[in-house]
Length: 347
Image (cartoon, rainbow, N blue to C red; front, top):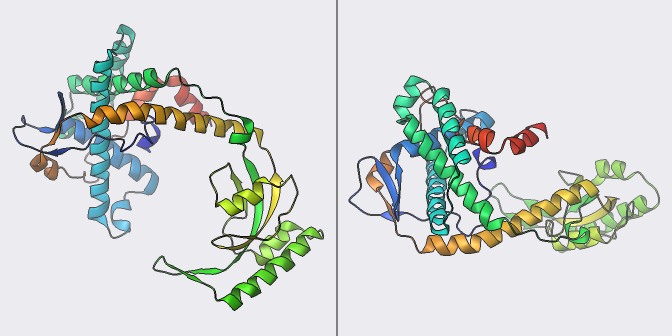
């Protein structure tokens, strides 16, 4: 998915600069954000890339499989508009902060642009409106956005304790006390049915405590779709999480009532070093994004933004075989973050 290759800007408020209608645009200008402009060709490159990446994961029939073709296509377009407006806002923020590309980075821009242009067929170049100059401009914008983000969060290295980031692994048995209806609603059991479920949960717990194999009890009694869970603090329902984090390895909880029903929890591992270290980095990234978001959101809110609505409405998805490219973000990572890409591919 392209989102995995984009800048880590999730959590930055709205994350995009809203774009509103105006007139007086240049030919093939889709939107304007203060002094930054986005062309129809840039939109087409992002749209083709996103469309093909989605289809590579979910299949080419994703747009019609759910019977909501127009809705899904509109969401894809909105995603593209949001990402491009974000990149343009970041280039303006870079300019305000005096952030510019160095000669070595500019050379990488030119190499990445040449590689992207080379990856396109003549038909794709014509359909998308791509030439070497456009590709260089797009990679230059992307590199500036990346660089200003890294500058803002560069000195933020929060200390996160093992306890805060601790990740545990548990098995659980759920005796459900609600019915999930086809329309997405829930129907709770009656008081008498809940009492029966509670008595069953108590009996199952007694069997577990007496030495009955927990896996066998899961197979026999549990209504849960997944029997083994690994999680950190703040990721599960409060009652479940509190009970689970108070267990030592191999300990079994009392019967715990949650919104789904009655739970019996067995701790498989009270501390997972590898998962905890990964969770530390996840928490650190969230905090960096929060700090970045404070500056980014305040900056974006001050920008005038205008959308060429007529041109935007004319933009549509590509028919099968028209534009197969999905290399734009991959090529950026290959030239600007080769170590991170190699690590991700080897994971």
